[in-house]
Length: 361
Image (cartoon, rainbow, N blue to C red; front, side, top):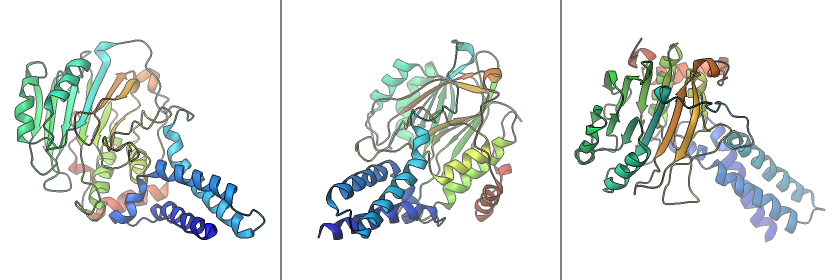
């Protein structure tokens, strides 16, 4: 009986590990991109239990141990870059330079959540230069209007479909634009931020819809939005930041493809997961809220902030414009298969990089 139970668990872990390698965009396949940390823990426990309870003189026992071990190794390959044992992809900022520092607080507020006071307290405490709210409807816009006294530069798109978005900024925003890149009811925001030093930074705020049984059956819309934004910023020689709730984990093939296509860096590599979802379930958390930037920046700090009653934790990232120090920071590089994949994804949605606004270009 013990052997049968462990055999069933081993098959389940192996299937959960192998299934994401299939490029099928259906949500039932892509959902296995998310819980790699949890699956790695289960695979490790399975290896330990196998060694303790199986008769190691049986060849089948070693087959189960090897399969579980390979599943563990595969999961670790994806997630280890987001631990402190990995080299940092983004350098630490050296001296403080407030005029060249940009602090962005990203918060998926959860539309029915009404704990606006908690978010306002975080803004007051941390004084971000830019606040980005996702899932914010007209009610949230009305409640956050008080921020405009100190953050007068805004971009607003209140929606009641879980895809509303607002930007509040202390710094001037130029060439601001709301664009529905792939889906008619899923906005993105694009602007040029003027730092206190006078330097300009091209910023893109995104929140593509996830593959799920309640949203899109497939990940094609999400993947296409990330690809065309990535292709657009790859052509820029100016400082660039892309941030928001990508509805995708940091280690997924799609996010890795975005990083390769865009040439942007992930400050979490070598530092930690900074898992922002789900705020209510400690054992079911993964990083869905992201900030990627060009080599022009180094990292001052990245912090997951306390819950505001949403299913997402807010994420506060402070980057410093330091082109000389950051010039040798190396992003992921695309190969021929990546180039073919990005073209296939974009063409599948009849979308291209020219659909993405290019402020400052």
